[in-house]
Image 1 (cartoon, one colour):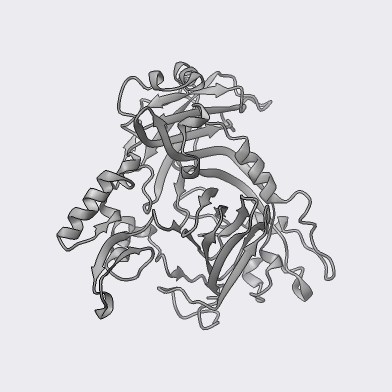
Image 2 (cartoon, rainbow, N blue to C red):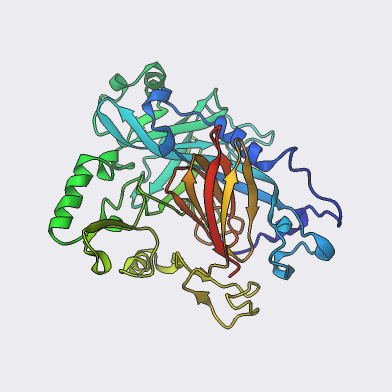
Length: 438
């Protein structure tokens, strides 16, 4: 992780006695407008709306400065009042033109994974006047272990969105167009919607429905539970695993490339959200703790049962503990020491627990906490959870993700990640929140 130092100069400061006007030009509305403008290639009825997960690449951020006597201390490495929430709010952001959506789509009796990628050309692909002279752009794409190689994807221009867009479905047959409506058929004809089960994998029934229930029953009869990390590990919509993508863009001649310095752009669907449908393990326990009958369990987060060891073995140098954190030299540790003698803490320290009632159409704004971790547990209603990268990581591009939260879903926010939650319904949203000023 590294602070983007150039953004420290973009911090908006407010002298004591003044505050930003969050009712005008609020960044959450800006993000929602971008989300609403996103176009899927097939007709609306072919998608499972609550399965959609969105990722938008970030170019730059602007934070709100501290309050009180330290209002001019814009560098977070020197901000010592951890309970000052104003310095952690987002003032504005600029997206980089890359949009990625994943979710479940339907074609006839098939319900499976899809991936949408949209792009606004940048230098060096564009002309000096900022125009890209082409009806299509080529894309090198790697999803997990699968890649296009030099057989680049041809991504056509969409007049509806003013972007170059392509959608890849895990559909296994050659008759996808015949199972779609007029919009989907047109997208197939234009090359904007492709059946690519070699790149995008998995069906909904891998984790929901009869086949999964049968696998769970078989595991229970064998005295075991299902380890979700091991189940269909290359699934594009895997409920626990991160989805890592590498992208590089080129023109039709393959002579000019838009890619990251020294390699490809790397994006990840990595928002930490768990619940009834996303967990490490599921099983049944008879006579729990010496009791009567049985219970069904789902391990959401755990330092036990080998889950963290498995994650560490698979992630290698990019591993960080889910319930712990790597301690930077300018962060406080759980004992409020700085600098700390510890390099990491493999636990989640809890300093507060709160119940919240989020009124209809109300929004918890886009903000980040420099030091503490926080957990959002949605108890009633529907929410749009926003989570993004404030710092630049060494393993991926900065981005912001959006997902729907349902009752029972739990989202874990790591130190420094900016986040927000919007009430999507015309009724109260009930939320249990807890965390720690680690």
